[in-house]
Image 1: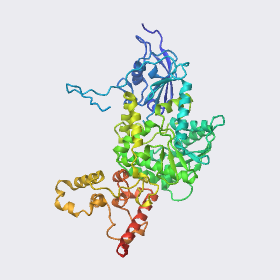
Image 2: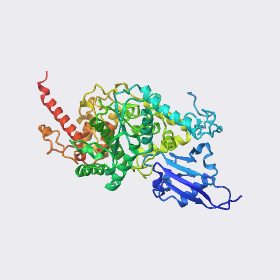
Image 3: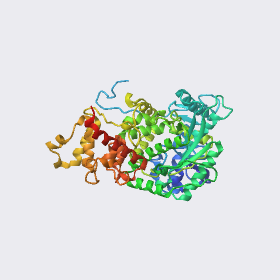
Image 4: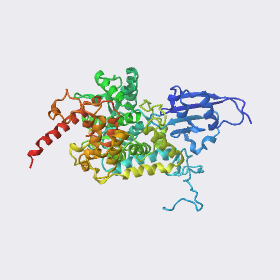
Length: 103
Length: 475
């Protein structure tokens, strides 16, 4: 099943993670239409290619986020939502917040 | 508990990583709301309200259990602009507000330390940070002050300034310059970070004394402290680790450093600030954007974070173990100034037992510094009585004699000529604990150390010289 239109979501960064994304705390992005559904896993790959400005290893490790960065989807812990397999819906607000001071 | 993990065929089974748990649809506390956070140690999913109540309760019970807070206390809360320290202010504010069931009776003042000088941040940026900080503190109505890291170089005058909405950063060019030199002088990032931590601690104590506060609150979470434990052990600060990670740091006689967030993990504190929509200002520090293997501190941070990800319950084991590792003779309250480290106020290992690890390390350093041909049967016989730990001093003077003008043996009276005299490495190192000695080792010269530290070295050395010179007259 493919999605016809792009997916509009809000990405937010905090705790220092914004430094890697052009020092901007809030990004409104439209994910391009693709085969299947957007999950956090595919979002991270997309972010690495399109949004990350520098030092990708400080944000992404393997296919997931670096340990110490918390992910909240609509203010809820992503661990409760299936982590990488969570299927992103339109207007979702995804917050990446670093707990690594100085990281 | 004690069973071995080896299988019968000799293969080893490793500890299993985090298993995926399936979560119930409702909060495990109130059974009505949808859960929003998974709290690792308890393996519970809580809803927003139950979670916030849980954090608040833990904070209050940590303070209450300690029985250290008195109604007349004035507390200096250290505020860096981070989400964690903002959460601490929010918790304090909630505890002080009228509606609260059992109101805190102590008073709170807030301190911000400007560290921009060591990173070379422009004055405009530093002033902007300062004003953003004052904006946050203003919401709570706390009396706030700021100071700069460079104030450690100032001898007299007030070092803390009131922080109001449009206050501008007051800096003194020469002490800023001295601070920059000091950090340029230290080569490795590990030593720089360690030095920054020790200086920060000094600033806390110095400011608290100036502002008449008897307690300093810092926003260290249990995750931070687990990182400190591993860093401390790697840096040879094992003996003082207990003070660095427990609820209260009693090293200073009049000001106690207290860590009220130590029962909470970084995750809990971060969620608390997200749910309360607390603003945070990110001010880069020494290790910002540094790779994870750039310093010992970053390495342990990486290690703990990975543990947290894969084996969540082990982090609290690390933390709880560290908390219990205090040795019985480390209570400094009755110690004299004389055998405390000049940098971190930790008891010096002056009277080490024979065959201690301090001696082993010093001996190994001596051998390594002499090179393959330098060691023969005379080397050891030249060394004086080792039971007093003088081995270390000997090693250090051998190491440094080439690079510095060592005057400790030749002229006894020089101890009182303050400004002409340059202190050699062995002079300073003798008065440092093992961990601080490593910082000194990393420096190119000792003259860039803050005057307050150098002054202590001089007074203690001249006292020692005096003691030596009257030795023969004593009965």
